[in-house]
Length: 246
Image: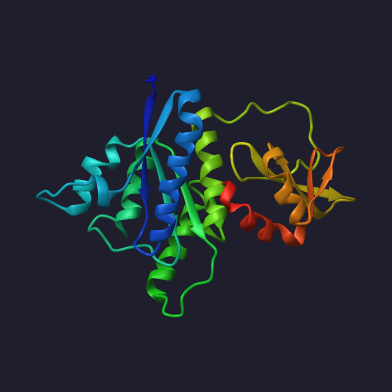
């Protein structure tokens, strides 16, 4: 059955050293569509220069700006060790795309990799990237990620917040709110603190279908906290074990 939906074009911007991240972001957007599009009447279209730009005469980045940047609604930028090649106007094509979005007042979501760098890293590019990251600290809020799973968690959650709006803040004071790390729209991690110290975390949400796997991984169901409790030391292991459910 057909349904009406609003289309949001999301530009994936990056230098050339994060191909796996670009693919992960595209897949995350497609996953969001599968789960949310019909209910929210919104469809997200991942846009990449290599799939959406067409040849033409003129400065290459200016053609990309005219064909893609000006027509997209949200930009997701991702970096690891490189900033990219100069365009004649800005330090790189990715930087120029970000500047175009910021100048137009459109949403920009930036992510910087915290994973280990290759032994042959280009030190000049790395310094340019670090300078850019420092500059952006006063211009926008960005996030770091240590692996593709964490990047997916960030992007999935931030897209939903971007499209649905940030929930209204309560006027009641909240002391030490729990830290959530979203795995899917229905399953998420939540830190559990005791006496002000976080030594455990909970897997919460719609876990009924994976309770057997959670038990095998060493989780203990806590009815009071309404979640499966694990040692904080096992967080990365549990996240990777549940990646098939993302």
